[in-house]
Image (cartoon, rainbow, N blue to C red; front, side, top):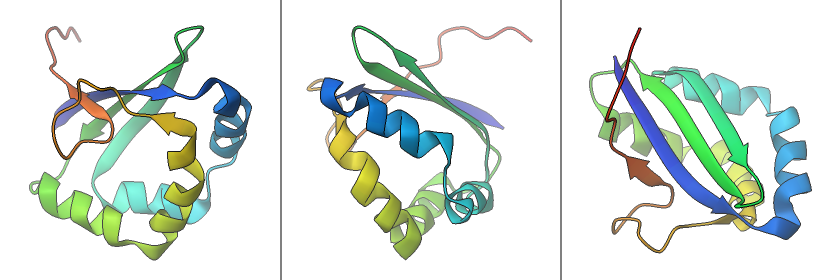
Length: 109
């Protein structure tokens, strides 16, 4: 299992909409997340900075393949058509990233 953290901005005028979407995530999206070997997926919002922090535990053996599967899903592409306009990527993210991946620097069970 690999713990993963990521961060992205949230447009202030889209906070209510983003919360509304995530209060009732579509069942197909939840199933896809599980099918792509992601468990314990959590998104936190920090206001007033309007930063989203995402955390998940990856239980698969080919992260790139699982992320490609997720990206190729027509239902997920539809979901993203609603969520992506709410988000504001960090300028410091790496090339090819939307959410900026974070380095795990401490963990305690």
